[in-house]
Image (cartoon, rainbow, N blue to C red):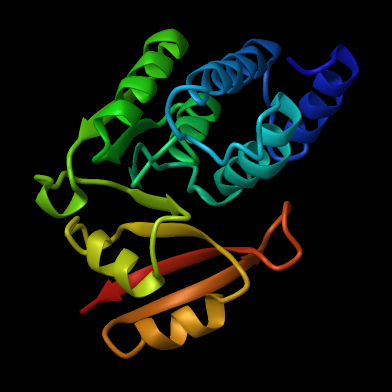
Length: 210
């Protein structure tokens, strides 16, 4: 558990991204503490990151910054390969959107369902491979540390709404990934500087066409 001093710092840090109530921040803390307990049994995040502070600094804020780029009129978010819930659970806690998390690992889905049960938000867990999912209308597609951009666009194309927006958390190789993806896809993109990494970005994709 993090110290009270650190929690205050994190609360202020989160409010620099968006307006967050104390009640919502308590849900953030509950999520991280639940993750730490489960991480002793199943691999949700690297064992190197084994404290509240580690998770907050490396995973939570990195995920939370994505909400700055979600349109205010977005209603349905789909998170691909959710793993331990970054960024899907974070988006579910911090927004009023309906959030769908797709994860093929049943043990991770058990964890995600446990968190969803406690936070009591509009979070839906789908224990299925993305390629086999029956798609639904979605306004925004997100992913973090899942696959190359080329593969992410292939998976995103399963959701055929032409107005969808993709927001992917990417690292230092993003330019190479964009060049590779351009060989197979037509799309517009904008790189937003990461708030948590000097080499990372949020890659915004629109007008995706094969």
